[in-house]
Image (cartoon, rainbow, N blue to C red; front, side, top):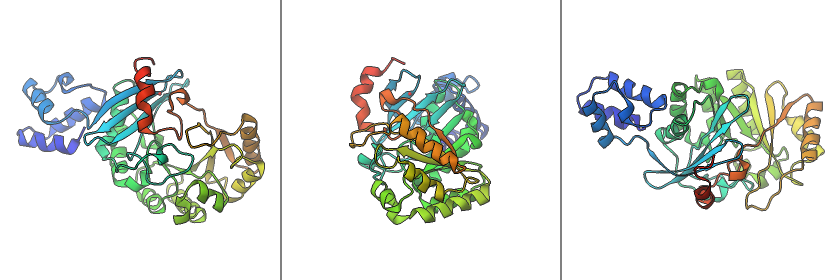
Amino acid sequence: MDLELLSRTLSELGEPSYRLRQVWEWTAAGAGSYAEMSNLPRALREALAQAVPFSTLTVEHEAHASDGTIKALMRTADGRPLEAVLMRYRDGRRSLCVSSQSGCPLTCRFCATGQMRFGRNLTAWEILDQALHFRRITEVDHCVFMGMGEPLMNLDSVLEACRRLPDLGITHRRTAVSTVGWIPGIDRLAADPMPLRLALSLHAANPALRSELMPVNDRYPLGDVLAACERFYERKRRMVFVEYVMLGGVNDSVGQARELAAILDPRIYKVNLIPYNPTDVGMQGSTPRAIDAFREELERHGLSATVRLTRGRDIAAACGQLAAGALSSEAAIAVGAGS
C-alpha cells in the first residue's frame, strides 16, 4: 500500500489525520481489503477502494514447496517482475525473504537473479507489499533482504520499509540486510539508529576468485569491505553474518576454509555456509562431506559456522535461485498445492 498516496487521498477527502493510522493498523494486521476495516465509514471504504490500490503489486503466480515454503511472483504497476518468499520452520519461525530491486545489476556468476535483466529499484511500498502479501497468509516474525537485488543500492527505500516492519510483527533485531559489499551503504546502515543485522555475501577469500565470482570485488575490494563491516560492528555491537555459498570444486576446499578463517575476526563474524542451489549457470554444489570439512576447519580456527537449512529448493525459491521469468511455467502448475 502506497501510504503517501493514501495520506494525500484522505486529506483530499477531508478526513481526520487518525484515519491514516486506522487504515495502516488494519493493513499491517493482515486485512485483505478496505471492506474489512469496520471502524471506517462504509462510504470512506468505498472511496479508498476506488482511489488507492490496496497493493502496489499484483501477484501473478504462487508456488508451494513440500517443506511449506511459498514463493510468489509479483509485478509492479509498470510491469517489473520480482519474487518474494515465505519460509516456515519447525521451531515456529515464519521468515520472509524480500526483494529490493527488480533484477540485479551486479551479475554474480552463481546467482540466477544476476543473469536476468535489471529493471529498477523498488519503492518502499513495493517492498512492504511483499511482506504484507504473506502477512495476509500467516503471522510473520523475521525478514531478510536477500531476495532480488542489492539492498544497499536502494537503501532509502529499504530503510523506509524497515521502519514499518515492526507493525507487521517483525522487529528490527529480527531483520537482516544483505550486501555483496556495497561500502557506502554499509556505512550508512551503520549510522542508522535501527538495530538491523548486516549480512555480507563473501563467497571467496581469495581476491582473484572473488572478482571472478562477484565482479563488484573490483570496485570494492574485500579488504575494504571487511573494514567497513568492522566499522559497522564498532558502531552497532552486532555481529556480522558472512554468507558463503558452497560451490563444488570452486571455493570449497579445506585450504580455502583456512584462507577465510585468516581474514575473519571470530569476535565480529558468524559464518553461514549455504549449500548451492543449482541454477542454469553451469555450477554445481559442494558435497555434504566437503561442506562438513569446510565447517570443521572454520571451527578449528575459532569461527562460529553453521550450515544453512535449505528451504524451497523444489520450487527454485532457495538462495540464489530467484529469477522472476523462470517461475511462470512451473508455478502455474504448483499454485494451490502448498515457499
